[in-house]
Amino acid sequence: MKTSVMKPQQRSIPMPLWLQGVVELFRTAFYSCFAVVLLLGAVWFTGGFEQRDLYAMAVLVSQMWLLIHGVPLHLNISAPYGDTPDIQGMMSFIPLGLTLIPLWLCFRSGRVLAQASREGQFWIPTLTGAITYSACAGGLSLLTTDTAAVAYPVASALVPCWVVLSGLILGGWYESRSLARMIGVNAAEWVAQFSQYSRWAGSYVWTVLRASIVAVLAFIGCGGLLLSLSLLWHWSDVVTIYQLLDAGAIGDTALTFLQLGVIPNVVFWAMSWSVGAGFSLGEHTSVNFFEHSTGVLPAFPLLGALPTVNEPWNYIAIAVPVLCGIVAGWWFFRAGEDHLDEWLSLKIPFRWISLPLSTFALAIFVSVPAGIILALCGWASRGSLGMGRFTDLGPDALLFGALSAGWIACGVMMGSVMAPIFHRGAITELERFSELKNDREERRRRKRLAREQKKAQRRNSRQNSAIAEVEEQHDETDKPSSEAVRRLLEDPDEPLSDTTLSEVAQKEEQKTADFESVVAQNLRLFSDLEEEHLEAQAEASSTEDDVSKQKNDTATDKVTGDKDSSEGKTLTHFKHGRVIRRPKSRRRSSSKSDDS
Image: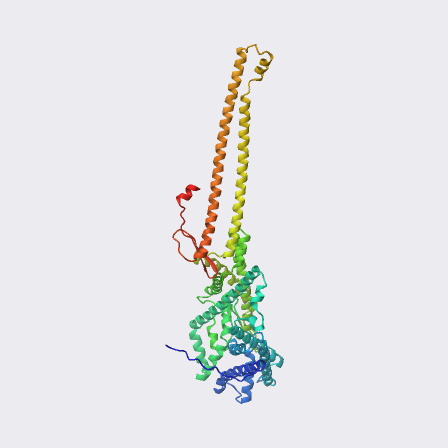
């Protein structure tokens, strides 16, 4: 039997949390600075810089390290010749690929500090570590005071904090899996204070935000795929630029690493191009579906992959953000937290009204956060080189975010409508809402039975009144003629004449005929009313049997789960937080039909 060997835990010097934060973030700053030294050292070794002394190398490393943290550099370069103007401007272009190095190191430090911290104490090493990192950045900015690219100390101390705090918080959350535990808040007790409807609303909002993140991540992946396809299509142009530079093996390697540093920027530019916003490579330049005006560009191999107006996939690229929206809508449907649609289905009985409303609202709620995130990404990818006409590089952030939100919204609506089609038998309402819906149907059934009972009472009253009228007429026919009675009372011994007897007989026959016609008419009316009453009772009893059978089937399905029933029951089980029903054929027995 194989046994796992426990590795001995690595012992470290015990220290308080604030001191451990200082040590971790100082080490992170040193490692990130060393990575910049390796990159620029390769260029320095091949003679790529005019000044080769160590001080000039240290200044260049400091400037590059501050730039990858987002610190702008103020350029003041004197012209080598008298007839050319001096170069003055602000260099704010951030190579986001190189920014990932300190961000990953801060993420690692956040995990280490989360392991060493107790619940609610994570802010202590975070605060001291951020102060230490800011102090290191401010110290490096002092080396650039008397150079052509100056970094102001205050900006150098404050701007890198976004990298530090982002990495530490993400690392701490990855390790503890709870932001509430990091600040000492019991999330379970806090959520328990709210009502059930508030918790449903909170879960809906959280699921919508996660769907927005899914759309953004899918769009970033598709943007990288577009860039790869463009590189393959224009590979000959890229290789030609490498050959024209002729930088040697080490120089080509350093240039390749420098291009890897700007790959995330170019990915966001490709995403902006795919939605129709395009991007610029300097003042009065534009690259989009309809225009390709760039002017003279530097010999940078990655620029050889720029798309042209007549590319075969220009208009097909519009489907990329729509596809990402479909993925987000599909993911949201699979999450099973569409409580807004459930609430609207209860409030609005017409499904053809509630479904479009919930779908449109979902598209807006998912696309707006995604558009904001993509607008921030576009803003981070653009910048200025501070010289010549290269002062406007990258996409228009607002236009990029707005168009991305629109295309993603279209995809979300398509995905939310297509997902139930491919998941046959799925019901979007949860069990708690189906029970409320059954209660509403039960109330409707009771009202319908009450109306039928009132109708039956009215029919019975009409029947009783008809019977009373018939009996009254029957009693009147049994009485003799009033004329004959008067004559008999006046003179009992005088016999009645034949005329009087014939009149009495005719009146009696007429009354008898009228009585028989009235009785026949009332009997026909009574039989018709009786048939209607029996039909109403049969319909009410069948409706009550169906409702009771549905409740019994629902209760049986909750107990049996996924067990197959050959007697025609409804199989019910949960899949991804949603009730899935597969109806079987129901056959009503002949005995029940006869009884009804």
